[in-house]
Length: 555
Image 1 (cartoon, rainbow, N blue to C red):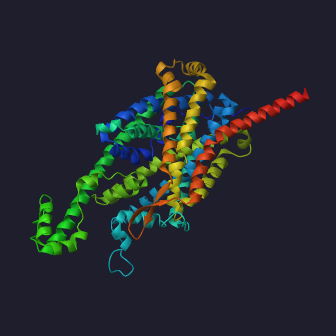
Image 2 (image 1 turned 90 degrees about the horizontal axis):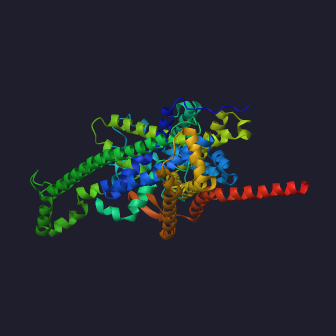
Image 3 (image 1 turned 45 degrees about the horizontal axis):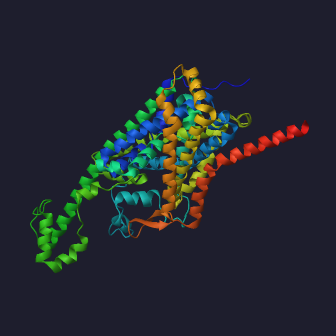
């Protein structure tokens, strides 16, 4: 007798699980960056439009497919058509790639959390050099927060070619991160809980991309979650709720981020003014307190004309203090999470408390997303009668976590951060766009939109409105094709792909070309998931014709 499928205890539990998965680190470190790059509040116009025409319809589609088919991604698309099994396989492959590197962020968050209980915070001051005669040279050229990130946390190598060894502290934190994820999995389903920029096409492209990836479309996680729903659940309402909460969180995170940007920029600007004023006061024997922010530029001009030789000696040490340039500095990703935020935190009152709260928040966001990623892998595996008949769910979950953790050790090496960037930039982008495009076409034109509409009405007792049908059948697929063409052409026009490497002698990032083997890995990452769709379809076609041939020969 077939085992009954587990169900969520109530619809609220399912919604919270979807929110926990969708609201992730991208809301904190990607959306604020895009707002700053594309006109601040005006970026909300393309963002909200893309939410309406792309985000909500595609989220509803995936939830409806999972709820209707009541299987993980592979089984759901195989039910629609045997030739579409590769869509589910591609989703699992992409989710596997994501799980390999994403949990490293949680490991770094654990590392910073543990160090947050020190007084003073270890990234607030530069360490002394070997002779104890001054501060470390690399730290002085960079900053204390950059030094702690690149040297103490990553111990980063000068280039991708110099892999170095595994760093045992991040490796232990990665083991802890995977242990936490595994323990959460064991508890089961019930516990997973400026306006001119509008004319810039890149603002619209990035708004669409942010909506697409923030909701986690194409990974199979949403299909997996929805497969544990009661068939009569109102997945339309759930899709709208999750989409709106996800977007509200992004906007709220931007408000907080811009507050931190402002605090950091003001602090750095005032600190710069103090250093320049002190240097000029000591060099030219000026009266203490004479130099202010309002007269600094005027006095500098006077000193340069009155004492040209003396001024030229100190000129290389005079920094150009500008509040506007500080505010215009746009950072995203790990640079925002582990450098910019920590630089602001170290200057706050009771900095240890804010640091603990901040990194605990990062962990909650990261682990919530990880549970969704692993669900996308585990649900198709546990749905498979061949695998589940030989191994219990606990063993399957343990093996998946163990394999991911073992491969993830690559990201704890000295060159691990460079490999992290490769996976983060190339493992999912084109693959997910292709997966969701095929999903939409499959539902509307293979399974049939009218048939799918009648299924939803039979399940939920509610008719599907014209808005959802228009988006699924026309607008969303055309938008995905546009995004796919944009990214493909962007990769081609970029030429030789480059990466940012840390130069310890300069205390800053420098641009370098990827070596040939790294380009091969990038190509393999993109191809290994996207090729699943045509290869599985071809394999199914061949097997089907072979079986027909065998039947004909027997007859």
